[in-house]
Length: 148
Image 1 (cartoon, rainbow, N blue to C red):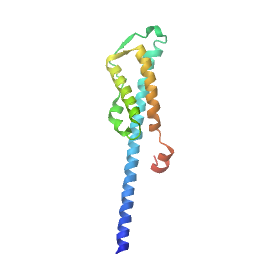
Image 2: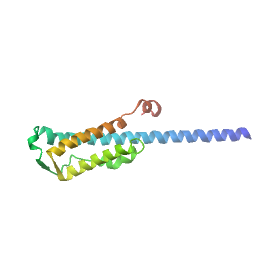
Image 3: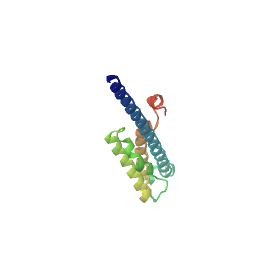
């Protein structure tokens, strides 16, 4: 009787551990996918800001030049859809920075921006990309354990 009870207990624990591993793997895959989408949109927005800012007006005498919106190239859909995947992975300050950058991108895309704002936004996007790109890259642990 004790052997059957011990067998059932061990079998239940193994099944629980297996299902937990599958769920953790699924969550990490969703996190990587969301981070790649956010990183892609950040790169696109940064290249647009650079094109309108430093590439179009390389000198600082045109910093007050206003570039009207809307700009369809500035998108924040991936952040709106996938921000919840980063809650346990990034700190609160990192999440606030990413949220601030995406608000700036959305506002600039809707209403427009000055050349000086495009230079500032490009620097902020660079900081945001440095936070999100490590999440988008599978680690050695991900490759060995989760087989991603």
